[in-house]
Length: 221
Length: 248
Ligand SMILES: Nc1ncnc2c1ncn2[C@@H]1O[C@H](COP(=O)(O)OP(=O)(O)O)[C@@H](O)[C@H]1O
Ligand SMILES: [Mg+2]
Image 1 (spheres, each protein chain N blue to C red):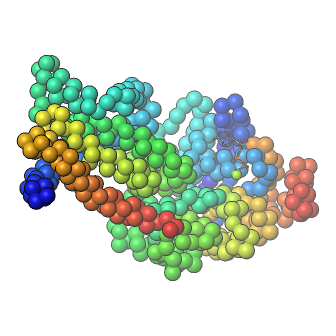
Image 2: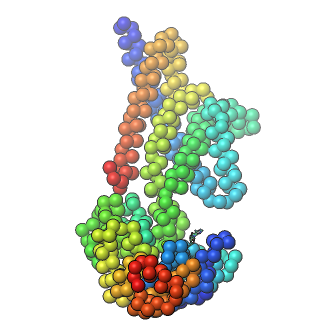
Image 3: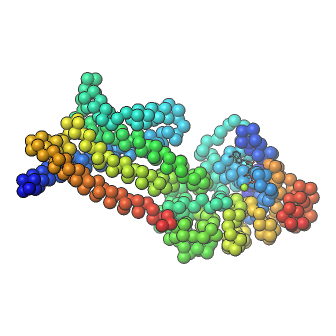
């Protein structure tokens, strides 16, 4: 029994550290870039500029219709044969950002469209420009609507970062595989890494609740 | 102040305004009445340029625009004319994520580029004017329908328009709170504000207006002093309309 407890304790810090060094930054950076991409894609799709709309639809169609794992392999193992070599970590960031961008562009587009026409008209009648109306009137309201679905996507991303192991990023899951391989304690180590993921996603969910509260300050509770 | 000439508006093949001409003098309150679907809202929206007329011309103060079918006008020119008008909507359309005060400040800060402090002072003054000094920090959902509508009036007033346009400002309100909104409008009229008001409140229309315009099916059927329209309408359609409201 002591042996298991010692192994558990000994591997806890390496796993935790891998989480802090890879899962957390991968999640935060990819989510930030992904959201910017999602917003851009949503605005393009609402813009009525035909070629841009088609490009945006094509992007969303491809990313949503293919496995994230395959996308990561194409970026990391495939692109070098075209002469484009990208490091494992940046490749993971690109893959995750593209994925977050595609899924959430639909969320943001729906949120923008859910804001009543009257809001546009009221702002319009004050003489605001379209950019001002978007930034000051529509997006703050759309943000409130999209926080719950965006949060789900955020939590999923925390867990999806484990896929980066497959393109040689020594993130948490990769570390777990290494430890399991050398100790043969698969059950213990994989349960342990599950616990560490649970820890990180719980912390991040708590942050989500605070963000939701902030955006709901002007709604009847 | 306002001169509308031969304004026509169609949505596709549906002709909603058919050759409307109308003048409003400075300080005048003109009330537009007419059955639902007659084009009253569309006319106000054309004055505010939320809709572009298909044909005709509109002059407000020193800004003037001509409209021709199939020819769109630069946003910048629309804006110029629009800034002479303030719009109060039937269902207020307040910004729900902003307090009453922030709603009134919004146009001052983003469009007129005033400082926050300046805008705040103006907003408080206007909220006081509509009797809502104590609600400056309330969000729209914390206000009654009548209070929301009064914030809407303050928001429109903030931009310093030459004319205020009201589209049935009380028709979404409970009868017992209609009065507080009408009172604010009557005060504005007293102060010499130029107003174009679409309303179904005939009593109010009669007491506030200098002129009444009766519209039906996209045309001005009859216009005149309130006593004339309400007591001695000349056109058959006007009589029928007022009869249905048990006014004659
Ligand atoms: N955006 C629009 N598209 C198509 N038809 C419209 C639009 N806005 C108004 N209409 C039509 O124009 C007519 C006049 O509407 P409206 O101006 O709202 O009348 P009122 O305010 O007098 O009730 C109605 O038949 C209405 O269906
Ligand atoms: Mg109407």
